[in-house]
Image 1 (cartoon, helix red, strand yellow):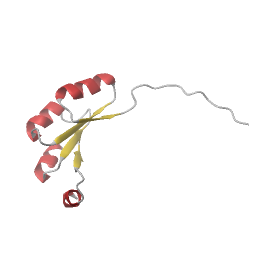
Image 2 (cartoon, rainbow, N blue to C red):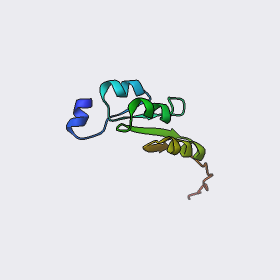
Image 3 (cartoon, rainbow, N blue to C red):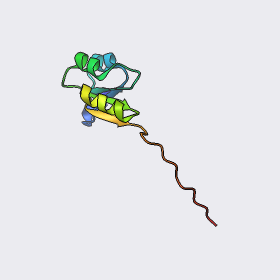
Length: 88
């Protein structure tokens, strides 16, 4: 898979597994809230690999940014009730 990604110039981001990303020479890793911290991942991977993080709250997003995440995958921050439309 890594070879195909490199051939087509598409970054390979490994989900959750920092050590696998390092071992295979992936372009980066994505860590969730229950995975390794962005800071620890950066210590292991260095500055050249992409590190993304998941945030389910605004506070988690701020922390990921402060820890040096390169990108953020944001899930629903604010639930809203939608108006129900009645059609005839």
